[in-house]
Image 1 (tube, rainbow, N blue to C red):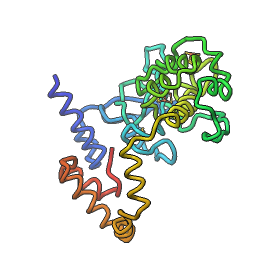
Image 2: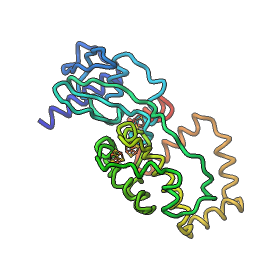
Image 3: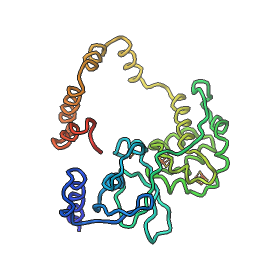
Length: 266
Ligand code: SF4
Ligand code: SF4
Ligand code: FES
């Protein structure tokens, strides 16, 4: 069974990457993109499926690797009442999916100068009084594609626990899926980012960071910076591939992908 799935994934990826003939693709699923039905190869990601169907991402795609949060998607699967959320670049298509992209979550963001804000729990409530409206429904946690305990970090914010918010939200990629579902209209990721900034400002600067800043300021790396800035794009790509190979992080196949689109593929 495992082998069959791996074969389907290999075939699906080949279909998307090399554009092999449809007649050679054995496994297909039907999905709906903004209400219109499409047949796409099974086992590709939502992002690949949307592109396979002929759409081009102008917004809503960034890193293609699960880090930038640009590809937020909500969907339902036929026969299932639940509205689900996912990252399009990290989730595989399923038969009967109804998809819609949410490339941007409109959200209010308070304006502040972080150096003028007290690194205290009460500062969170000053800028985000709406966190007191949390009804502890846990909808935000269920929506999070990073599987963060989102409700818990909002509750930590309410208690003024900056460290708790910072640690629980550390892997937030600001996709906005939590905030579009929240009945209390909280913008979780702005609360979390503010808390991390406040918390980070209250920590002592580690010795190695102080040391590195001193080295930069004294010009230790000036010559190397100058050399890098003078390289062409091709030379920088070559250098990147060489260093990744030396670290063991890039195989020869990966290296060709870097060359093809200039930045590597997710
Ligand atoms: S969705 Fe909103 S109201 Fe519900 S637990 Fe999360 S923050 Fe609280
Ligand atoms: S906490 Fe919210 S904004 Fe952050 S990754 Fe989870 S759903 Fe996205
Ligand atoms: S495109 Fe960056 S997380 Fe999906």
